[in-house]
Amino acid sequence: MAEIPAGPAHSSAVSGRSRGAQAELFARRRLEQAGLRFVAANMHIRGGEIDLIMRDRFTWVFVEVRYRRSDSYGSAAKSVTPRKRRRLLRAAQVWLAQRDASFDTAACRFDIIAITGSRVEWLKDAFGAP
Image (cartoon, rainbow, N blue to C red):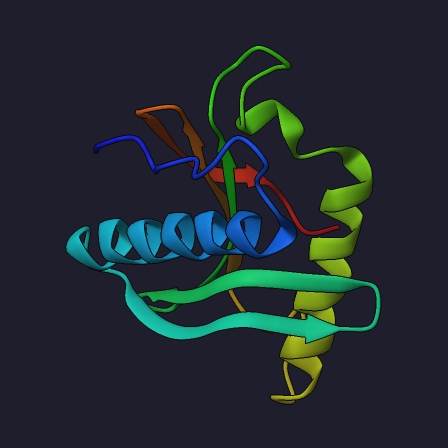
């Protein structure tokens, strides 16, 4: 993958969102090429968001996409903090409940697509539901 352009030196929040959207689109395409089916993107609830929701046969896959231009401050994968994981779990719990499901009744996993510069890591089942 070519590096996602950083834009001008005085990057604004808009260009940051644009880079995030590019990274999410790249991740979605990569997952679809691997056979996963796209379900939803940018699902928001109060206090949380899920970047991508995919389906891997009978498993719901909740995907966090992280992008960092370089690893000067740590890799993109390392930027998924315990707080972020809790928010992802809560958002997934709400999303499942809206479909009359739960972690107990539906097969789920949490993946991370971490893009650091031009390096891409797909961390399958990066962390689990309680």
